[in-house]
Length: 447
Image 1: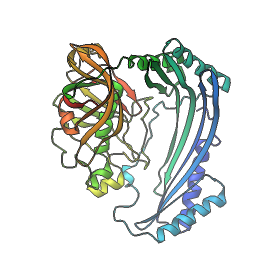
Image 2 (image 1 turned 135 degrees about the horizontal axis):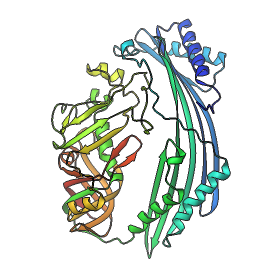
Image 3 (image 1 turned 45 degrees about the horizontal axis):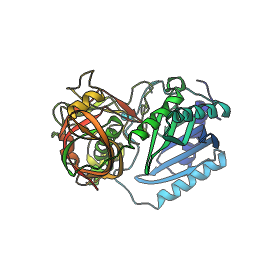
Image 4 (image 1 turned 180 degrees about the vertical axis):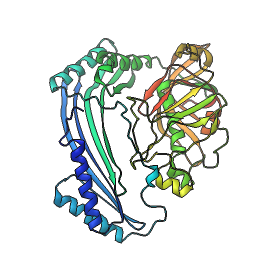
């Protein structure tokens, strides 16, 4: 591995081992230590002028100790021996003054990752500042090709990080990962109408990113398409979420099946496991082991490997997202989701390879296509949903004009169950992957 960090993995292993030894000396019966190092650089331009050139090098060290079932936590950025000793002393002192928690403690040894997989996550890139500035200028060149659009910012960035996790039960493993990206922010104007839009693309490998100019053009085209705004009547209509906005429907699902809302009984899906929450043609899959994917990981923040599994099968809710603590609270098996979900994809068995956006618009017929969402979204306690939206009014499968300032409302359970189709126009954003999603009906309120 091409190491760009202050320490290699052996060095990080020595740091965590020293911290665990110190925790034992100060009375810990169990402990877990993690250390991370990060490097990144960004060029930010706006309308040809350099707004910022930043280079970041950071590190962090955390320790959780257990004295029986009492726990204490400390954090530091100082890796010196004296600091490690002080971290252990402070964490154990904190644990002495906390209440016992019957669900606290390290994962069972059998649950820990035995052989971490190489998931092709690390492809370092350390360009000089001039290279990043050139790429940011190319993003703005893509915006400049659109006369009604102006750059509100262009960013080119490169970054890499590594982590090491170790506990007092013999687990010690680490891995490195990279993330590089381009971002464009655009302000489009026509008469007295203004629209702001952005576009971002990122990935593990710099060489697999789209051309920088394309990022600017994508943001500018989306912004200008929203300038032809006209009002619509309020009512109930079919709604098509484009693939980017449809990501939010998947995010709400993962929030509602995560450990804390479930054991705190603040999720409307708490009693829905084993019941249909989507149509029969819908499946939702989690897969932490997709090579090079943005949310892939060999193990979670507790050292447990997740697995490829079905969260929703033929519309039926099957799986939750649980770390060790929430699994114990719920009396369920741990799923390796301490720190959140990994790669999650929603798919329909009815989707055909030629179900691109144009095909999905034809399936929509007459209704609203949503491209942007704002507002808080859903209440997890009952699934009620209300968000401000903008997008396009569609008639007979053809876009007629842009729409802004509308509110779409419903209930997540009813919305999911009304999914009529999912497009083949797959969009990936971080941990989530989906095509455009067509809902048979939603409440649409115009201002």
